[in-house]
Image (cartoon, rainbow, N blue to C red; front, side, top):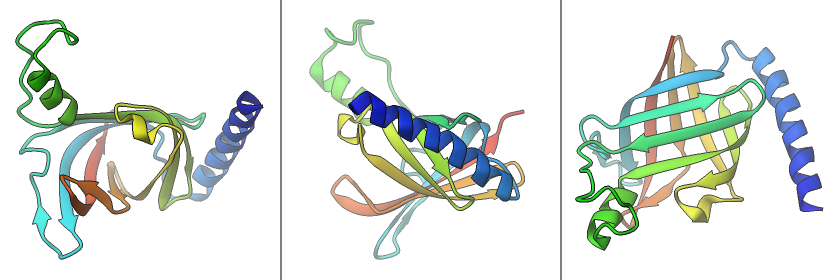
Length: 165
């Protein structure tokens, strides 16, 4: 039953995504490199280096309705040993908290992307829907989250991406 539901949602996502893309001025399909990330609190406080001065990331949207995003904070340190399970817990915690990744199927409606998350570095996101508001201008894509908690503070995260050639 569950696999049938996922299959139907996948088919609808592909059809809806392709139809919505045809109605938009541009397409988000492709691979994007992270340019910047900014966090804004509900009080209006802005942190332009929320992930450090030079975070790294790749964002891919495929024509068949799949996406994946990977973001690494600036200044991440390698583990003291190449074994991610045996490395000291403190190092593993820091590595985990400075890296985000998720993937799934998406619907694009010109100003919004809704992703049904199938896999994520934060297990809490699996089988949820993540909504992002998007603006496409030339080769730049701006993505804004709905309010999320970061270090106990509610913020909106805005990331700017540049299309890879």
